[in-house]
Length: 421
Image 1 (cartoon, rainbow, N blue to C red):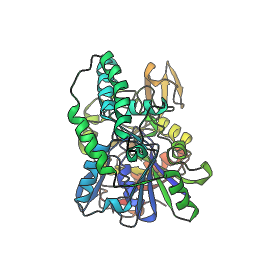
Image 2 (image 1 turned 135 degrees about the horizontal axis):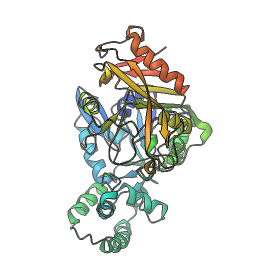
Image 3 (image 1 turned 45 degrees about the vertical axis):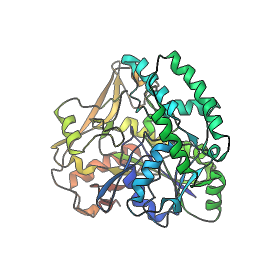
Image 4 (image 1 turned 90 degrees about the horizontal axis):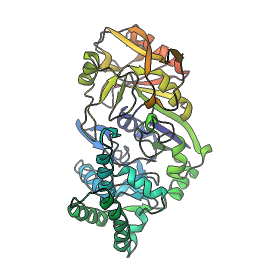
């Protein structure tokens, strides 16, 4: 069976640490969507490492890791990442596998991303400029090159053919930057990848499931960035919700067992787009400072606000979440008052539903206030020892969402996770 672990907000929920925490319980960790625009932060031997494409189980020797067909893969980023992983003494070639159906991000995809974003002026969506959108467009347009293609002796010819098509688009957008250095890096990285375990991903993962192996599907970004159900058009280009596991790995729906949703104890967002509970004041700045809220991939300051239960319940519904993990609860330690958004007020009317097009509406969050706990919880290891005010905060969220917070993260370390009753 497959358990799914994914984010329920706008990404950056701390999924990397949580996958790393669960990884020893699983035989295989499989990444099912997204690209190098996602950064999963881990702490290995007290050193910070950010994984962008490699699944977060890579540091567990007995855990296999699969990059699935739903991912768009940048060979250059992968090569750099592998070199970083190797510096920790990990033999990545031993336990890292890549589906041959995984689509490649080309240098011209990055150029198209940059040109497209520049052309939008004030209507920029906040792209990370990693080539994600153009790569997915080529996938749906049936033009893409895939990992299996790098083993073909005619790969360079295939690349040139697609590059010429991209060049026409770039010329039409007046993009004339020299990307020859990008291409040189790309082909070096492709050569590097040819020695990897490139497999028929769907057979690989289903054979593991059939033989009784335990599998965790690891998501990137967050549910509110899903291309269908997120805050469109300020979304990513893939299905970040649990349904994406089936198409992103080639597993049937009945193979999915638990859906573990990760949420911060508050809310953050990187880039443009609707964010109803955003705090553009001293409280928001305090959350950013205490939570070190800067993008793992881009370094951009994250927008911060109170937890949005309307959006969180929506995400739980579309994902079929069975249990919750609350991260960064310790960031709220010093606040005397906490708030949760329980409804939206739109045009004078309250609603508990996420509207179809949030970006076109003036949404006013309606809050419920809670007393803060004013206590350092980072050293607490048992739920019973948590302050009563924190237990009330968690209990209210449980009741509102009708889903239980089973794990609470109280710091960046692997051991700083509390199991709730």
